[in-house]
Amino acid sequence: MKSLSEELRAGIMAVRGTEYIVESSWNLYATTGASDDYFYSRHWTDPGQAKILSWTLEWGSDSFHPPWKDMPPIIEEVTAGLLTFCLQIVARTPVQGT
Figure 1 (tube, rainbow, N blue to C red):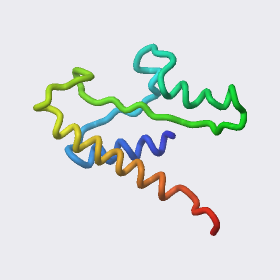
Figure 2 (cartoon, one colour):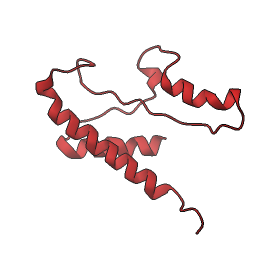
Figure 3 (cartoon, helix red, strand yellow):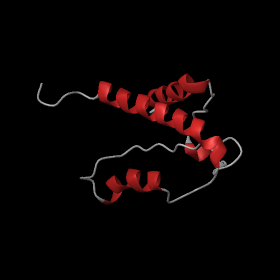
């Protein structure tokens, strides 16, 4: 998770040099019952379910909802970060049947 998070961070930084902080979401503020809790906990109620590890991605330095005029470059950064992240997942996933 840490290395994939660093890849996401690098993808964001490549656009405008923005320093995105990588940290566990529980370090940000107290929350329970979020989607990452739900997806991870499924294997406790049904051992046949896989453990799912989730990421929380937040943007905007002063607000959860930056004004639209601030959003286009943020959208570019997040898109680049997510594409980098996804390409790393594909690169690290073994091909079935080979």
